[in-house]
Image 1 (cartoon, helix red, strand yellow):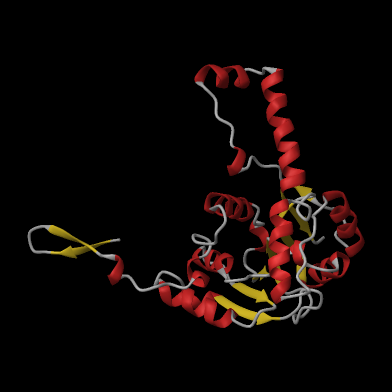
Image 2: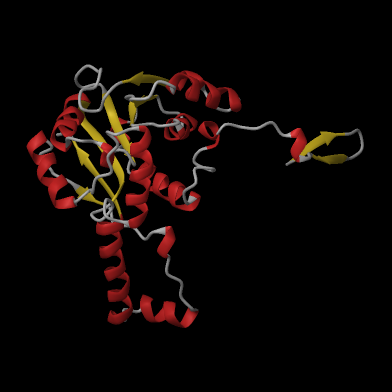
Length: 264
């Protein structure tokens, strides 16, 4: 890390050694040290933010299953009132540490609540947005959770989801992860998010417009083109375009899904 030091005639810089830098908790540095792909995490959040409904931004947001609170921090940096919600009991410390780490963060924009997503401690019609980033697939009862989403969202409110897809629970990585987690928490669950099933559940919960899918290229499988290839694609070559659409269809169903629902 380089710290600038002002002098009268010039600017000097001092290189800090590793011994000068205090150890920082991962609960503060996530998503940048989360052990997962940082480009993927930031890419997915940017899509989530792009889906915010301008007509509902004056109302509080709910960061559902907030974990260490990094999504809440990002929302506060954008100037939005946000409530971090999770079942674990360290939310206050997580948010306070984030607010104290950077004077550019308005800590008054962040608050927290503890509880279970199947029965949340909020009044009806409170939130303009519900942000669900990698949390839905941990819920045991999807219909009950979506009923809660419908209850706490205001009219015109929007719930936005970034989740693993239809083969999440059967991937080798997930199976190995669950085996470790169940040692500490026997109730731990990693479910699939199958879009057709979610769509039916959203209708049943009262979201009359159903699920809106947002297919996106993914950082782990970005496509690159030479100038010649790009011009071929751009001018309408059906083979090139079919290859891209096939990739999008697979990724945005089996591996990573981004979707939203609006409360009418």
